[in-house]
Structure formats: C-alpha cells, structure tokens
Image (cartoon, rainbow, N blue to C red):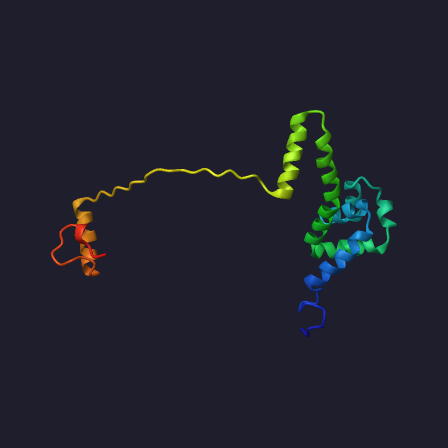
Length: 170
C-alpha cells in the first residue's frame, strides 16, 4: 500500500496526530459529553451509552458532530482522554483535600496537613545509625574443602603444597 503523508501505512491516522486532535477537542466538550464518549467505548450503540450515563438518547443524537469525532478518536487513543479527565478532576480533588484542613476533628485536619506538606516538601526522613559486628562462618565438609582447594590450585591461587586455605595468594 502506498504511504500517504500524515497517515500510517495501514491508512489510519498516526498516534501523535490522533492525540493532538483529541487534546484540542476534549476541552470543547462538557463533562456529560466526555462521560458519554468514555461510555461509548464500552457500549455498542449511542442509545446504550447514553442510558449508562443517565442521559436520554435523544439528547446525544442532537449533540454537535465534535462529540462523535471524539468518540472516533478516543477509540484510537483512550489514554489522552483519561489524562484530560484526571486534569479536570485535580482542582476538585485539591479543594476537598484543602477543605479537610478545617475539619472539626483534629486528626483529620492533621492528616490532611501532613499529606499536603509531604506533597510539597517531600516526606520527612529520620536517620538511624546502626553499629555492630557481622561475622560470617563458612563450614566445609572435607570433600567440599578439597574441591575448593583443587580449584584454587588450578587457578594458581595457592602456594604449592598448601593443604588448607590459610596460605592462599592474595
């Protein structure tokens, strides 16, 4: 198949183009329209998707063509839509978190304060100094020690005639 500029070899739009177009389109949609676009990825028909969002099917049939365009683009790039929804929800989530600072229960206000501080400044760290001695003891069976000594001897790491590991070359 002949490659067309701006298109993938299979004739579909390239991912980066889909993402850019979807990024431009999503801010033009209402929350209900974005919910419908997401639901439309799950349900086969507009009617089923509308009902799942608590909307009347007739409502979605009268929406502008940009909604159907978003449905088509999202079917190719759901990640962009998810990121857009997350960004829209961030302000609301922060208002809830900051609102918890004024909670009448001190432990809830304290938890919110700690979380906000840790987001901004990082978690507080404590260092602990540990002192001590670590001893490792290796016990070899006679056969195992012999095997180790043989290998060390073959590698030239033992002085000739060595019968224990005490005189290995260093």
